[in-house]
Length: 185
Ligand code: ADP
Image (tube, rainbow, N blue to C red; front, side, top):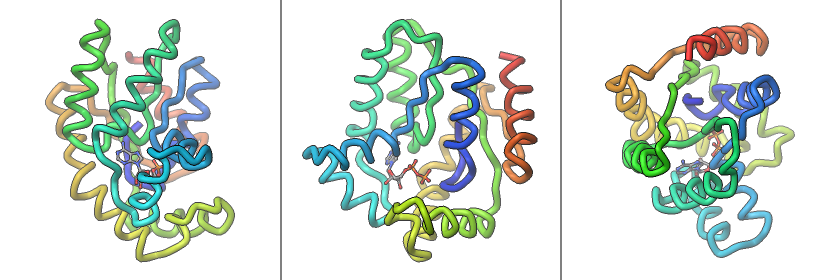
């Protein structure tokens, strides 16, 4: 699942794991789990996350690799919020190839910046997430996305794996569009 912060990746991923019985791997959730547990990795990541900046590639690649190894019998995975840089995408391809596997496809949720900012500020009211509470940090996250993450779409487009979906509409409408794409895999 690909898209900017606030595009609805987490909401749609939740529905997808229920429908298809997949394992959901959200690097944002994994990092927040490390913070809650007070690990060294979590402490380091928190500083960057609270600023709206990405954490280092090696950190998230390591976390994903551990989760793949811990779920060897899974039917499949949904990656949510990962890969977020071209370097992460290349590392993931290598990691999956070493396990004789590959990405089936990328589903990109398209939502404009004004709508994203609005959604994230709303989410910040009850999510308790520091990075959702401040308009300056939200804009920085959207800028990080445009600078570093948007190019990841091209990476998968070159592999003919990119499918774009309109991320504005009801949750069920968007889910319907996504399952339509998945049916083709
Ligand atoms: P959102 O998609 O709403 O921005 P996430 O929960 O996916 O939120 O991520 C929150 C923060 O965690 C990001 O702003 C970033 O600091 C960090 N993060 C999550 N995934 C990655 C990743 N793959 N690479 C680098 N940083 C990440």
